[in-house]
Image (cartoon, rainbow, N blue to C red; front, side, top):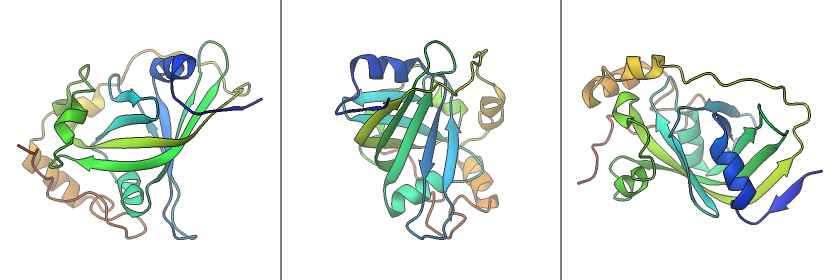
Length: 195
């Protein structure tokens, strides 16, 4: 039986922080727009900031649907599943915002992620999510799966790209500056870090 919580603390926070991956879901306001669901991982790329706020690092990739949807309407759901241990699913429904590299808040937020080398992954933004609703459910149908280690391919590929090369890479992709549905995505060229 699912329960609703006012805060991300205690057992819920511990559960979320122990998971090796999570999923994000966003959608545009348009009824015929594309719903986006993305897996997120890489150790050290997620942080609980306080009892109602979480954040994760938005690294380089082939599209920017989450960023585009958040810029348009802010709606986002994050989900964690227990693939090991007791069954559980936790969802955080809330409002998200991409904080870009030239935002004065960026460096302060980045300090919450000391355990990952962000230069190796083409950091584009930090996604900050404020929870409106936190729920857990049983997770009885989620299979057992064992975590072995993070893949190193993402870091190998993007570590070779400085900001100029990263901006060129994004400019060649169809769904970075503009989403699949034509919404504004990632600002290009990449903004420099704020001073």
